[in-house]
Image 1 (tube, rainbow, N blue to C red):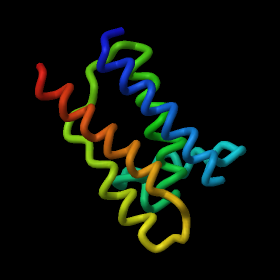
Image 2: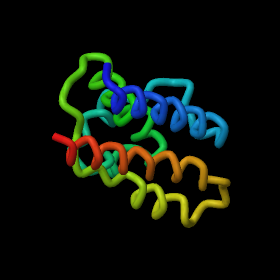
Image 3: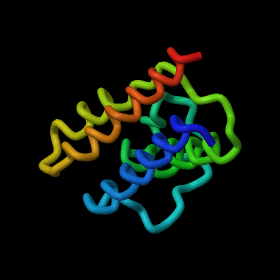
Image 4: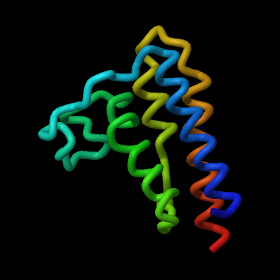
Length: 112
């Protein structure tokens, strides 16, 4: 595993930690139907935090563990900013981690 993979894994852990601290972590698995959404961020079947927990984090952990090619053009932070803008939650640390993820993935793409 190279340095970019380690940095991404660290941010994934930070994202999960923030979701838990904000009490946005679901203890139960989401339905199979919800997971089959083809919409961006599965907006039609789950909340943004659920998408992070059930789609983004598992996929990214899998990519890191299998040493697969990292995604490019990641733009998660703007969606988070929009989602959390109407909620009264201390979401700035979570958004900061998502911005860091966006940056890391764009840097990994540029260094190829």
